[in-house]
Length: 266
Image 1 (cartoon, rainbow, N blue to C red):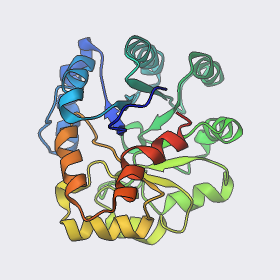
Image 2 (cartoon, rainbow, N blue to C red; image 1 turned 180 degrees about the vertical axis):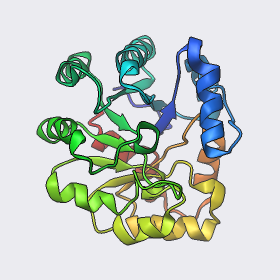
Image 3 (cartoon, rainbow, N blue to C red; image 1 turned 180 degrees about the horizontal axis):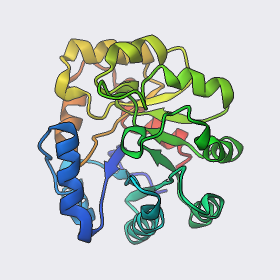
């Protein structure tokens, strides 16, 4: 992958097919009781990419029902083939038929990882039905980007991450939202003792600079990646907030680009 002067990767962006885009973005807003800042389309993402100063986006969407998996993966793959600025993460669902076949197709299509959202997909991180997916990811080194944490549910509670790693110690995980969206105290308790990476998406809106830096220092500059959670937030605004923090140049470079590039072998 050709490197630009800016060297910025956003590891957390959602895009949707045109037929369901408006409904999908509206549903996310309702689920989180938050207005969406952007449109959720590849065109919108790419149109303001230069303005936001971001080189690459890791893009994904979540299958809330097994029947959606193939269509979503086809869409994400097609977009990343057309636009080299986009890096594809696949969706999978533990209840889908022919799961093994879709895992094989994910490999053949060259996806860079898997995105899972336990709260949307209604499975606990440690649920036994996830075994085939975890076996595949552990055997191949495919990373998993997990939505982690929600005060309303237990599916993705940060306390489940250490339990998962007891059974699958070689999984390569990115725990989104500093490891615990709205479950910050749980994240502080359970995530730092693991070897997972975290992203900082959908954290800044509820945190002071001092609180953000507590998490930055807790995890350390080598384990944090920049993410915006597009279309929930504007990536340029999120990046500006990151850059306003009292981070060293080295730490900022790692969080903006180097950690993701190394972790994803870009």
